[in-house]
Image (cartoon, chains in turn yellow, red):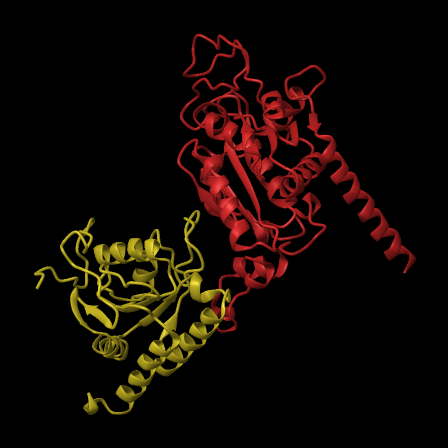
Length: 193
Length: 296
């Protein structure tokens, strides 16, 4: 077991890439929580718990979900909205990745080049990335871990992200609906978990 | 990509920042008669660029973006230079290539698009500075023309390496003294338009960006000819006002001076008979359509 845990920050100006610290990506059917490989279901349940216990939970949908460029994107957007409504979770979009001048409006959007501004401004303590292209998700996740105390969850359409505090890979609308289902149960009766 | 894919998912419409809503509602995607006159009345496909105030390159960029026949089905390939500061702000798919490799990257891209979308017109436009096109990337530029690759190459010619402080480039005029070329250039400006013509380009034009309607006609023509006939090349004078010691408001006059009779950027174009026939045919069809719609 790798001793390095991908914990909440702030870890410092230049946190190491988790991959360099020896963390590996989950295989199909798995996820990771703080760098430790777990089953996908376990990661999904933990994501729901984090959302329910957060003060300012927020979803950051990226371009792959914000824009209706294919059937899956449209269905994923619907699933994200269901999750947002069920959990009372804010949505702040990451519409694209360009560096914006002179600066972004942190209440309206998040930018991968300085995601910490949005997190600091809105006091976000738990966030979920969904539909963000891998390279910019990695960049953002590292900056967030470096400078904020926000717990990051990356729901990825491909292989997941080591630099998130929690990741679920091969994301489908059904997996987001599974989070919604658990969030609803937790809100009804926390004793069941 | 296609016009139909540039849509915000319904669920997120209310939380999207206004500039993205404007892009969907008021841009010129899918409009067949788009052109420079849309600038000011429609949302442009370029926003918040970080070029210097009054930079002719930014003006050229805006005119080119406004003139592309179908931006939603276009991929631009850029290279190192001031243009690479703008590409992240452009609402058209684009690739940043390694310095000088832009025409090689565009070749692979164009071929892949032809395989992936055999029944669709997918345009590829290379946009690079004179250093990338003529010095560092000359091999790639010429080889793509020799092979007859069907895409448009646009060279923003500012006659030096502006981004790095003013070094001598192949397109610099003879005798010119720049900040980092203090002894003056010893040989003539490379005659790339003539080389392009001899290398197999179906359409070549040399111009400045002082006349938007001319830029529109030339860009449109170059893209459409590249789509159907063969490679096309445009060399556009975009002086670096900083490096030639001008003020922000003097860029336009500099271009006007450079395109005067006998000057190096006097408008000239070369078109092969085949490309000319294609353009004539297109113009005749457009005219017939206009007459038919007027009659109805």
